[in-house]
Structure formats: structure tokens, C-alpha cells
Length: 449
Image (cartoon, rainbow, N blue to C red; front, top):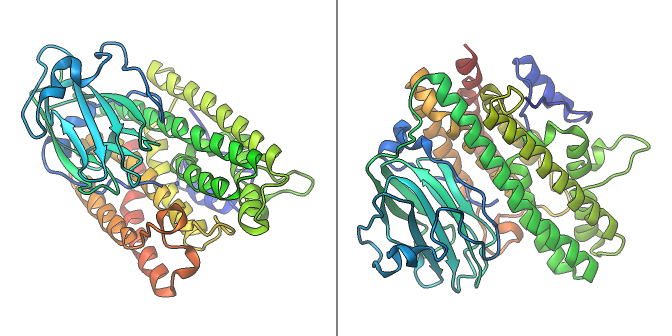
């Protein structure tokens, strides 16, 4: 089990609130897209909750996992299927090829498969505005790929039950396209609430591991750009990296030394200690506007992120092995709520990104992290209190809808710079946040009761 311990004085207030509620951990704080869709179908009732995303490489060509045809869709005949056709691969893993183009967005071939293991091979042909892709079931991200710049491809695998899904390509000509799974998977997560909660911890551990995996390439790009003295590239890499950390910050905060090393703000630095991590680099890039002297900080940041990956994987392994030392369901619930606490304490105030002003990027990432943590618990919550999931999901949808009005493709990070927000803007966002936070904060008590 991972336990929240915050050494930082300012953040201790947030911790106090969570601990007072009986929580141990997960209070933290996270851009890319928030999964906003709420498709109808079996997923909404938890039938699809058995899906398990596997972790493949993030930004370059990655070999298909064992059991999947190395040549992806072509080997299964999918490549010959026209988009929109109903195709399946009975008796074995299905392969789906997704092509991304500026003209048409994302196209899946086939767009229908039988339940079970599915490997998606994703290739960005020429779309400069699309760098990521997600497979959604209701509000939950079942599998995703990041850093899909033009010319790059990657794969991910999931196990899915029958139902209606969506392929989400933020920034595409059509952002969401339907994807259908027929039949029923052999390893559907059914049974007792306890079993579903254990399954939720495994799914959440996969989500965390994926986010850290996605975090490493932009941090490496940051290191390279700073070393080369390329200020613009370094600023862009900084913005690309932040969301991956913000989505899973509750887990990072369970390793206080690493969290302090990676994400400490100047106001939290204790006397006599060095200021390291993202934020002194941010100040150099956006205030001093120079890469000079940042080389060591960037190199250390990369080292710390890789250490975080190792520690998180150990948590995941303990979760899967059911040793009692991995992720716990109530921790995930508290983390979902804690991420929204973090938004209220440091994003809506404009404190987190004081130099780059990309606060809404972090805001959105925190919300997504919270939503994904909640989504992993949905099948169990449907058994515990059938009214809870629809209530919270609708509030999340409303929050995401408000937040989406502040997207700005021309701004660094893709969101309206914080100084441009009015008092009315901040109130609108705060109200939408609070509307989610109130029912969400009750989830952990439902689980532990």
C-alpha cells in the first residue's frame, strides 16, 4: 500500500483535509484530453470493465505484443476491410489498424471485432494536430497512445467485452468515432464487489504506469532541447510533459522525496534545500528566457522520473500479486477526490504554473486523472449504490464541458493562458468543480463501509 506523506508546508493543508476524512493517500493533483464521452451500452453498466490496457512503446514504432500478429491488421485481414464494415477475428486476438490523417481524422479498420483480446496498431500519416488516441468505454480510458506525431506509429492491446465503445482523437476532423465489440469476453470481471474493487486497482495501476511511460519522452526532449540551447523547443517540451505528471500526482506524492524533487514550487522549498524539478526549469525558460544553467536540473529531473517509474511498477506488481502492499480501492477513491482538491488549491488560483501560465493545462490533467480513477471504480460502485455513478458522471461531463470552452489551439499547451481568465471565468470553473467534488468525496466511504 502506498501512503500519502507530504513534507511540504503549504501542501500540508490539503493533506490534513484528506487525512481527517480517513484517507491515507492520493490527494494530488494533471493535458491532454479528458474523456468526455458517455456512450450508452454495456460499458455504462460495467460490463466492459474487464478491459485491460497493455503498455507498449509510446512514440515510436513498437512491435506488436506476443499473441498479436506482428504486422497488425494486415495479418488478420483487417487491412482489407473498409472502414465501417463489420469484421471480426473469431477464436483469437483481433487486430485493428487505426490511421490518422489531417483530412479524415482517425479511421479504424475494422470498426467491429469480437470480444476478447484486441491489438490496435495506430499510425499517424500526416496529422499535425493529432498526437494522441484513446479507446473509451463510457468515461474510462481503456487504452491510449501518446506522442503520435506524423510518421510515427505505436500499438496497444486491451481485452474488451461486448458493447459500444469510442475511439477518441482530440483535434481530429471527427474527434470521436464508434467502435463495436460483439459477443462476450472469456475473462469478464464479474462477481462480488470485492472482486470488482480488486480489478479496479489493477486497472488503475495500468493507467498510472502508462502515464509515467508517456511522461519520459517529453522530459527527455526537454533535456535535449536545453542542452542544445533551443529555448522554444524546451518550452514546448515542458508543456508536453506536465500533464502526464499531473494526472497521477497522488501516486507520485506517495513517494515524498521524489515528488519534492520533481514538482516542488518555490514557496515550498525548505531553507537549506535545493530547488529542483519542473518549476525552477519553468522559471528559467519562461522568466529568464534562457536554457543556460538548466542542464543539470533537467538531467536530474529525468533521473527522478525514471525512479518514479520503477517505484510505481513495484506498486503495480504488488497490486496484481495481491500482496496487500499495492493500490487499495479506497486510496483510488481518495485520490480521485484529492486531485480536485489540488485544482482548487493551486490551479484555479494560478499558483501551479506561475511562470509559464499554463495552469489550465494542469487543471484539465488533474480533472482527467480524477475522472479515470473514478471510472475504474464504476463497476463496483454500480453494485454498491446504483445512483452514485450516474450522478457523478453527469457532474464530470458538465465540468469537462465548461473546461472545454477554454481550449485555445494557438496557446502553449492548448489552453487559454491563465492571466486571460476573468473572475467570472474562475467562478464558473470553481462551481463546476465543486459540483463534482461533493458527491465524489463520498465514494471512499461507500467503498470502505
